[in-house]
Image 1 (tube, rainbow, N blue to C red):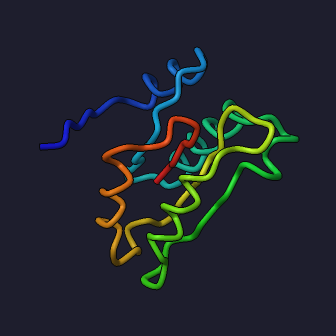
Image 2 (tube, one colour; image 1 turned 135 degrees about the horizontal axis):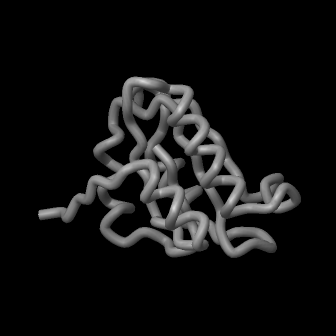
Length: 115
């Protein structure tokens, strides 16, 4: 059985400020504004402005979103950066998001996925 952890936004901010990043963040809540702010915060701390051009990917989840493509992106290595960041907005709309479990069993340590 998979181990899950629930942490607060304050815990995430504290860890990210220390340069500690998790391979996957599943952000949820009532207020989309705060989720977007936290998402932007993580991305900005993981990547400089110059690195974002090649290492920041934003996907908007739809029923047609291909989870296999997200996994392939996540398995790439970053370009001139320690990390790459993949943001999947509105992931609740992705029909086969459970297929991401295959990747989550062994995530790439250089990729940060924010759902």
